[in-house]
Image (tube, rainbow, N blue to C red; front, side):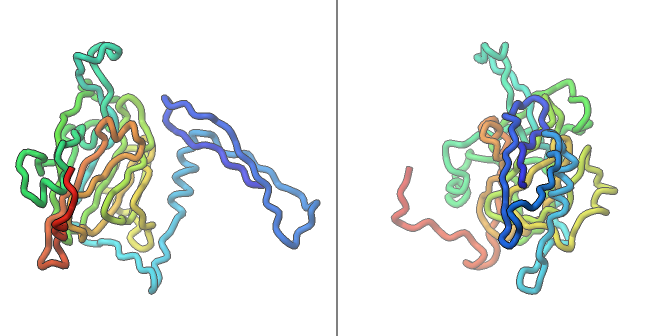
Amino acid sequence: MVAASPFMDTPVVAVDNKTATATIHYSGTLANSPTSFTATPPQNATPVANSFVNSLRNLNSKKYPARVPMKIDHSLLFTVGLGINRCPSCKAGNGSRVVASVNDVTFVMPTVALLQAHVQNIKGVFTSDFPGNPPHVFNYTGAPPANLSTTTGTKVYRLPYNATVQVVLQDTGIIAPENHPVHLHGFNFFAVGRGLGNYNPKTDPNNFNLVDPVERNTIGVPSGGWVAIRFLADNPGVWFMHCHLEVHTTWGLKMAFLVDNGKGPNQSILPPPKDLPKC
């Protein structure tokens, strides 16, 4: 007997709390073999979900090695969460609206593609001053700050080719703590650590798995917690990192890494073909 139930540890989001069941009959077993039943965990069982995720391991074999960056060139802390900004035209919200942000920056989509602006050196499309740490430090998983507003902009974080990067994604309790599925374009990363509460840069790295962490391109930031990822910036270009909850992405929970060219054509962005259609 297999049972599956939804997991949702965000208190303000309602889900259809149904349990699906299926029966598996293995060949060679009797049709009347006894079936053992168990209770599914609660819908908001964050420790159970984290325990399962923490049990996953990389093969780290000779054929499939886990090349985890050990020496870090850029150590970043990104808060991910919601906010409230003024919106005079938002009558339903009494002059305000809910937004989302990374490090208090609500991303504004440009009218010219970021990669096109980078390759063609078009000025005024984006700036490369995305903050590597939260501009405002507070108890991220505790009581929210008095000011819930964010800044807006089209900002990227610039990386040299082949830089090693560690990003700690920290959920915030602004409006409500929430599990954010964050996806990085252009790279696979190693999930080296995770925990509940606020990330502690002095003690939490002692528990990082640098031997056989899973390698992926999307990871869930635990509700009221954090995850740490590491990757090698060996793919030149402009690459989005964003929440995969569509509503959060449209509200601005995204940013981009700009990775510079390295040395020679093999470490550089390919030029666009001459017959590339233009918008």
